[in-house]
Image (cartoon, rainbow, N blue to C red; front, side, top):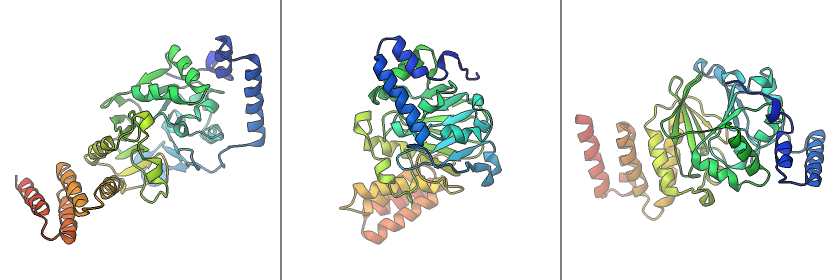
Length: 330
């Protein structure tokens, strides 16, 4: 369904709130002045740079682009030549980037990985011009109420106009490409990843960040206010291990082409290493069990070798090795 203008076009947010008597005229005036100044001075604006054409790395990624993240602003992924966004960042300038592909009117939907402001705040600028549908996990939908005003009222207004659709684990988002929805709580309770089977592309939000990203540990840590739990992170990464991931498209940091699956493994083993600092061989044993469960026998054997180097007499390492041999012989 194509996005429309009308009541959800320019200055929609201000009109809805004012009409409902939820903010005073003077507050509306202040917000308008703030908006004008922010635009005229380019404060908080994205530094313009050409969108990364993902098909330059793999022709199966045709029609997909990456708008680079900046500071605390998440990256944005553009699919279907501008018809679909995964996340919206939170800095002015995204619309300019999208218009490089053509009219902004083509934007039909925004799919959110989770509710944090650095991923959803950019919707404010977009809704000055068009009104795409929003897709989000139901828990993240509730967490949107924790954002600073006027965003909670804005999303409530979208709900009242039936512009928000809820996504659940295992859902399929039709399009080109079609995306499989994966619920991967941990960073927040409502985290979602999206997998394109045809290209092996995983859009991971903050569930998996490249280990080269300096702030990856901070940006992906559990947010307890939004239901984030380390235990859930482990389960989510185990789920992703079983996917034939080729390319990793994270919420922060550069895309990882052709070796995306390695980043999932690195994220999980790094987590285990932090958990088992007193008994470091256990990190490799835990990782080995997860890799075995995912059918990655050679990788599991390498974990046994690592554990045995640290603790040569480890019974757990020997038992894991035998399990690997038994599984392979079946």
